[in-house]
Amino acid sequence: MISVLFQKRAVKAENSATKLKQENALLQVQLQNYKSENEALRLGQAASLATVRQNADAALQNLLTVITNSRASIRQLVSGAESLQLVADLLTSIDRISEVSQDGQ
Image (cartoon, rainbow, N blue to C red; front, side, top):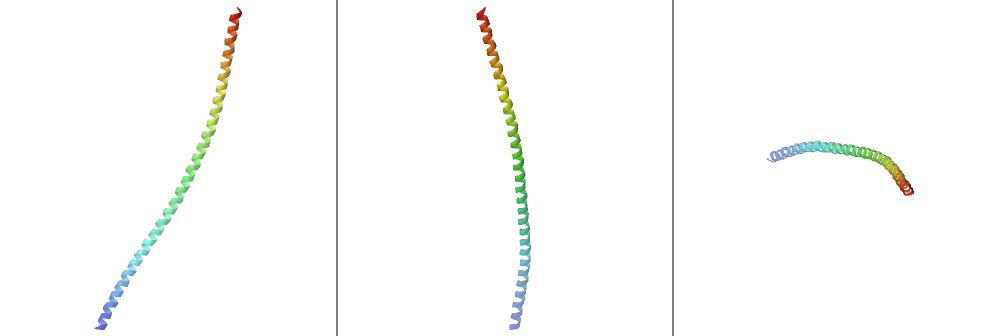
């Protein structure tokens, strides 16, 4: 009778051990999957950071181009304003000359 009881306990223990081994194997697979997923996320984050850096560099280059072009436009605008001031001064001088000529007649 004691022998049968020990056999039942042994069978139960073996069944429990088998279940635990299966559960352990499943957990090992899940752990490996999580490690792979974690690595993929790290690589994705690094790729995203590289993309952000590239976009920032492109934006910087575009901004520098806009600054250069705007400086050239401002120089042209100032030059045009100076030319217009010269024309305005010339017209003022002509107007004064014509007034003096009319007063002298």
